[in-house]
Image (cartoon, rainbow, N blue to C red):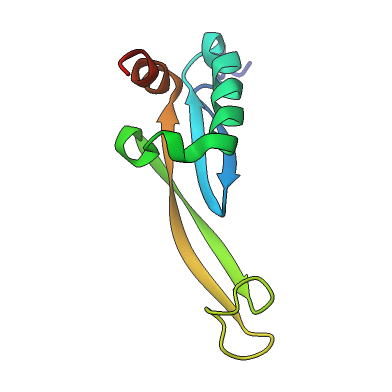
Length: 103
């Protein structure tokens, strides 16, 4: 604690990846932590079942590196690397819970 102020860790983002596409699930308070871990596991396996782009409340930026061994169609010459800037969606736990309830 500094100067009598308590530092909050929330919102807390959990990051994951599905088939090379990264996303995050955001817990807004301590009561959503378990739900956030559940959603992270579920979406890591079944991301195509929920449209995260439609539900996202925020985004994060990251770089992808492609090499010839990883993506031959992108890199033309041997040993070439390509950096691609990507954007991943961040979805709140409450939004995911509401989306499932409304289906």
